[in-house]
Image (cartoon, rainbow, N blue to C red; front, side, top):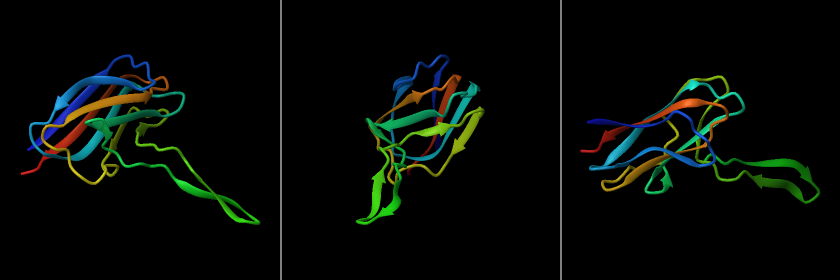
Length: 135
């Protein structure tokens, strides 16, 4: 059986603001897709969203490790800070993502919450998390 959790906020301030309700999971679920919609699209960068299972992001860490120009001691390696958010880009009012989830499921008894880190001018924002119950 499918279940869709909906998080909505008309005017999001940003800066790690939690939006919508906290949902209690009465069964084990597997994440299927996340949809982000905004009546007014972000205009100053990406709208960044994260969804948490008992305080831990359900998305994979997308921090990239890359090398700069080689030096006499070899390449310089740098790492971006940890980033588990998914985003809606400038000018977009809708995005559906299906491949950004960590491996593992959402366990019965978990609490699911959502935060917006940067709204970048977007407003009337709705995030939906589609789940499939594990039999």
